[in-house]
Amino acid sequence: MGLLKRKGEKSETISVRIPASVKAELEELRKRADAEGFDLTATITETLIRLVKQVRGELDRRAGKNSALKRNGRATDTTSAAMSDGRAA
Image (cartoon, rainbow, N blue to C red; front, side):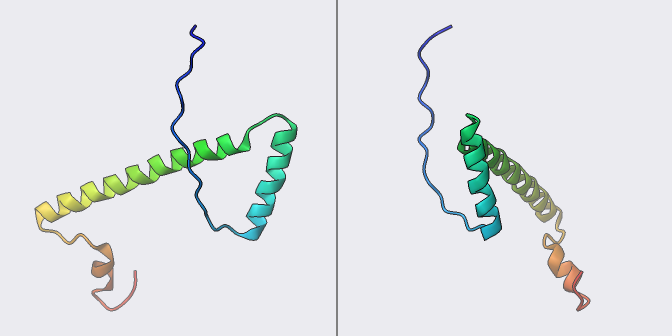
């Protein structure tokens, strides 16, 4: 087993607006996690990475469906089809 470890990807800070109650709970969870020796930031980072991959996959699948529909000459916008009778779906 080697002692050298690769450098991780450079990290950057983002700002996200969340409800004040969620912020307060995160602050409390951070205190509790720190007190027990856990890294809440690492946990949140890993969760965001999984979320990004999931959203990208979903959007990529939708893009694939839309391009397939365009090739077949079908409508790609389900909203316009639902609104064609003047009512929202």
